[in-house]
Image 1 (tube, rainbow, N blue to C red):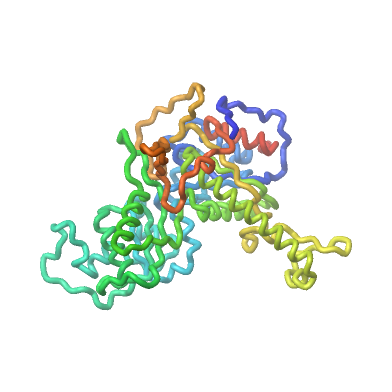
Image 2 (image 1 turned 90 degrees about the vertical axis):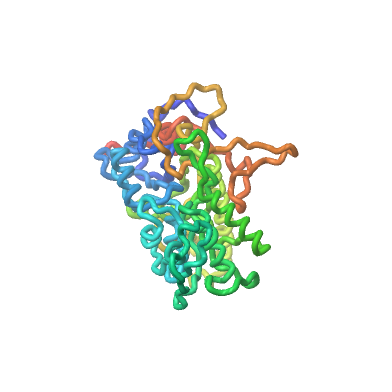
Length: 449
């Protein structure tokens, strides 16, 4: 881990590269904005990545947040606040990677989640889901399931909708309103295999469950953290286990720090690089303010890339040893002086949709303008802001221990806390210092054209 909190700019002697061989993944809240207010150096940091006319990004970059909502809304907010154009295709919201889950887009999905910034149904539609059943629609179809709030009981005798479709999957996009209703109906669907008008069955295969955003808590205007979607998931997991005796199994957990969110972000960065005629990206830098999400996720993704690199080398060796396989792969092999040379780019994770050699590593950079506060005796510049943070900000918990010395883990059940995974490669003061550090590490600076 490297500390550089002096906000030094050491780019005076950097050589100018025609094309960068790196990309950048920005967290938003605590890195670029706090609430709706820009971090003081954020606009300057973004403009340093652009051409002299500020029309195009010279460095491929995406913006990745655990917040909920429509990408178009977030892109418009960033464009307005930072004074640079941000395309919706550069935005990765917490739920955005669900666009890749095509197998579920034509299944009847029970969708639970927030109602702000477009609402769960509209957001699910934007992701490609076509057969959406909301919690409210399920209540209407089975009027006696939701029974906690007596004011919502049917006023007159009601019948179940017998022709109502069987639910084939559950999609949870974020913390919902009326937790008791959502918990009850989701459990009902799980234990009846999608048919809550039938008796529960505790054996057999569980319905697929897709969950977005695992943050246990987030910071708002209160003096202490508020429950996030991770807290809702804790309730659901424990209720399901108490009732069925089985662990709830997730088909996918989406949002930072999950690998799939970083892989999706990589796909976007590679597509942006292809459109800018950038032939190779070796490194992606992930800039964030939260060790438990941004840094944990970046480090986990770096491990994933290292594993993929080993697999690629193994496949290359197999091709080199097998002329028959080499002939089959065609463009995957180049002939050099009668020998065969495997081309790395065709083993990229997304080699079928990009012309970029695959990213080899992910480096994490932690800034001090959000939820992370360094313990070093370094004077920190205050940020005066009383606005409400968005739900994508999750507080860094003190790693408390009980009387037996057991660490209290605020992470998700399936992503256990380890101190190693929350250590950043570099710690800098703010996003402008992060950009300067990246330019220094890459010996690169923007062109004057």
